[in-house]
Image (cartoon, rainbow, N blue to C red; front, side, top):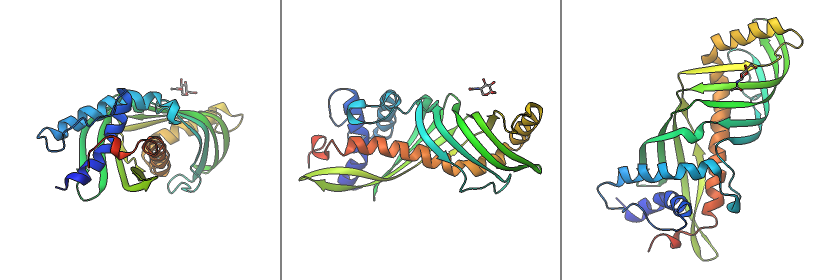
Length: 248
Ligand SMILES: *[C@@H]1O[C@H](CO)[C@@H](O)[C@H](O)[C@H]1NC(C)=O
């Protein structure tokens, strides 16, 4: 395997661990037999920093993660025909990630981190929904919460190296966050304005059909969480050059 390229994928991890520990050093030996386990341990140790964020780098907390707007209306219910817009969304629980597996692609600057979340991931915020559920017109708005149970996720990072003011830096071009869950629990307050009983019935319909509802919402969730991670990592990577971590 190309030592230098593996080094690049490791950089992201090392920089974060270095910042966490107030020093910057290479933690896992690239040639070590225990590299996979060393990576898992290193990434696990980064999570408390991700949770809190790093204000001096402008990197926002990951748990709870704040998202101003989550527009789910471009994936209008393939199944249930309801369009949702969420605002002022807080996602909690991502900090409960337990790292299971780390995969490096030696050909490219790519890292996949597999994790299970030991706590439910809960989204809360405000919503506006429009559409139809079982032929009832929906025009609701108010508070909502969504609980995602037993999440298994992969943080898929891809990047490349650039030269900035004569120094080597890593930029992440894409971060994806595909996930699987065992159950989704939805609560939309006031789904049918002024009709509490019917609102409850409609919530029950959504919950009975959670798999279909999830299909509509999943791309937006994955995109929002992925780009929050990307933003976090790039804020740090743009400030800390590769040369402060590895010898060429
Ligand atoms: C979700 O909403 C329901 C109904 O409004 C409420 O009873 C429950 O406490 C909320 N859960 C969370 C985690 O906010």
